[in-house]
Amino acid sequence: MPPKPPRVTPSPPKTPVPQARTYVRAERPKPARRNPMRSVLVMVVLTTVIASTTAVAFGAIR
Image (cartoon, rainbow, N blue to C red; front, side, top):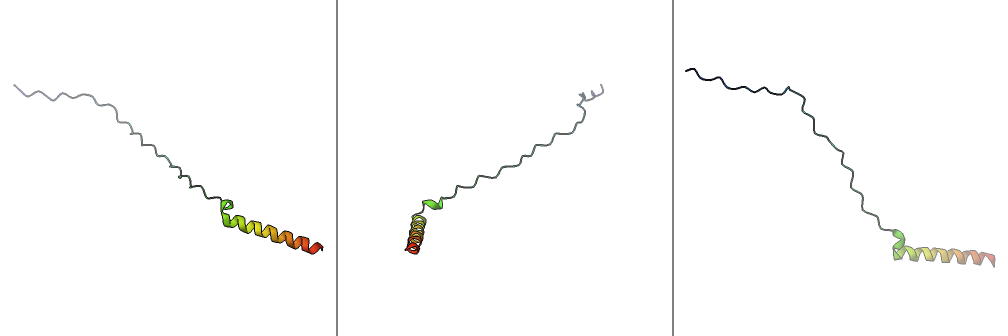
């Protein structure tokens, strides 16, 4: 008895394999900067400048 031929199943037609989608990653948000107006040194300098400017302005009037 001759050997049986292997059973062949039809294969689906060759179609291009869809490429994996590539996504652009968003940048991570930058950490919030500290508000410099909260610094005590800045407030002291600002107050000193305002006070000295006021003194000069009222001194010029006399």
